[in-house]
Length: 545
Ligand SMILES: C[S@@+](CC[C@H](N)C(=O)[O-])C[C@H]1O[C@@H](n2cnc3c(N)ncnc32)[C@H](O)[C@@H]1O
Image (tube, rainbow, N blue to C red):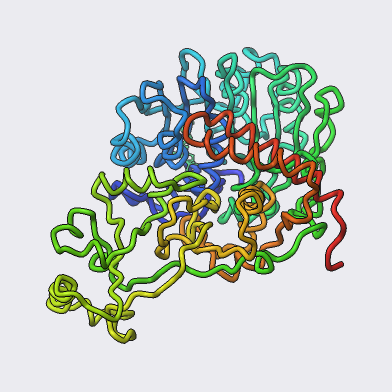
């Protein structure tokens, strides 16, 4: 149990305040509840609150700005959006100013107590990881809680932690289409002090869902308290259900937006009683576990070989820009390639994308010297020898040192690293992939079949399964080895009834196109596809069981 006075709160364990050179004592951090949101969770929260209509954003307890970084990076947020952030601690705000604020002129930082201050206006999007502290004296609590009670018509227990006041105040600050995602401890769901908060949220019909993390240690490393994300939405209708989801770990959260409804529980608002305990309403992990059912699915390796991309051992030498190719006369001994995942940010990579990269001066040619070495290639290799490229780890173990791997072109790639979900990309440009992508080599040579496979691989179910197989590195970076991808259970396109094939191909083609031009339409296609896959996985025969 957290102690009465200023115990640690939510956020992954971050041992020091990064970025600004300030190193507050652990006691200072504990007193102000300074624990920070892991990037994967922050990215998901930003994604949920930001809509095409979002023009104003608030973070009431900003800390170093972990929740605002993905907000500013979000493609739907216009540069002109008003962004306000609050924090009690001027030292941590300085860090925030040096990092996040430097990236955006539209951010206003307020030093002060968000709960005790007048906040003007309303907001379209609010993200918050409130402090989990109870450091005020009883007298201060009386005054503060009394003010809330008077304004909102609720009766609050003086034992409640002040994070519940953040929930209440945020609820009052949402615009007509506003959304809020608040990372809090779960205790208000079951404790008596939570009843007035639940009652208020139901009365206002503003509670849209609660995502409960299964592993307490995921978010509350220092205090053994489980966490949840409270989702508020102002434009709910009386018929909109409240969704409860149990999330096994941060990995599943990444793919949650694509989860079929059946993996969570939904309740009409009128069916929820504020006096009852709510924690069990999020289905047990068993409901989320059969992420990709066994029905109709086979390991991907039965449908496609998965191989890592070409490792050159020295990309700075072996990859060249178009201008460098020309300068050294190497065009005939180079092969078009892709070196970075960010160079193919969508679900397909076409010749026009390659041309844009090439014209922008990206390194898109791979030196591919075979048995015969031309004079031009020899001159370039001599340059490499002068630079010591032959002494790098991979080149040392190759004979000759400059012979890069010969790999056929892969029609489909998957990103090797990801923070927000792995992506399968159709290689319509027919270029070679370096290690930023693994290559998939399908056993069937048919475009419709390939589209269906790609459509499934980019589905919510596949993303979740991949997230479970990934290896997690620091700060939420996930990595897939080719074997992890090969073992992924997938629906065999040949098992898909003819009647569904056309629709899948049409929806997926539309999804790919709209990822570039109309994100809302792309999301619509993705959701429609996920419903089809969910239905198919129910109807298909059970394989290997
Ligand atoms: C749990 S941390 C979250 C920081 C950041 N938003 C994140 O997600 O990583 C809570 C922050 O709230 C600040 N804080 C504590 N009490 C506050 C209050 N009454 N008003 C505004 N900020 C407060 C703390 O200094 C701390 O930086």
